[in-house]
Length: 329
Ligand code: SF4
Image (cartoon, rainbow, N blue to C red; front, side, top):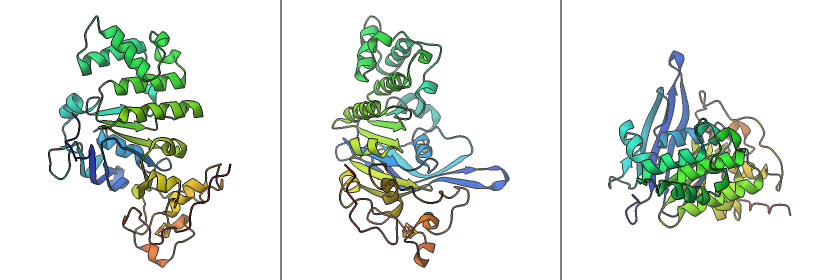
């Protein structure tokens, strides 16, 4: 099922996730996220580890642990009360039977852990094909080979077990499984972890190809080069909040990121300033009342003691206006 004409594939509004901890404490992992994903679009969600990106992905798949509390909505295939399924309130039966694999495909963070260790890749592809597409023997074998080829997984390796695969091949096997259902939304959570540059490029190109005209890709990554390669828009998370959302061409080209944290992420790249952002992100269990980046920000002043709202794509009282330096050749 694809989004109705003119409707986003995914519409996230005010999505918040916090975890209840012992002693009544709370950890705010995602706070008030809002964005749409249009058909044919790739949105890259970037930020340092621990900023809330993967928790957001788990929320969209209904895979949060029992101590999680959610607020807001994440409508799949519609928005504004126009027939979308709210992923935050859907029951487990609906998520298991109609969403995971069929309407939302997941390329996982740890493919080796995602694959069943005691079964060959062929057996896992055939089972997923039977389940999601209804294909039966004798068509199952060629369908499994076609699914493998779609993710550039070599057919000659189909009878191997996961432990016999390199990291790159395990990633391609997991990608092949994720693509089988032709889900309108593909959610890739750090899909390039542990891959060399060439494989990173191949993997994200394949994911991008899946999008076509009527599907969408949410690419969750800390790899800015991967985001730059395939994203149409970039959303930057910091300390549980989206602090900037921009067209990829503006973000990576001119004028460049406007939030000081986002600018710092780009400046930390080896081909640019190679200067790390000073300090560490705040603990999600003890976020400040004002701007969460203030302790690391050279532009902070007394106005930053009030939390900046996301306005015109950036949550900062003093957005950067200088043009981004070109990368070193
Ligand atoms: S609001 Fe203030 S502290 Fe926060 S990023 Fe902007 S300038 Fe820096």
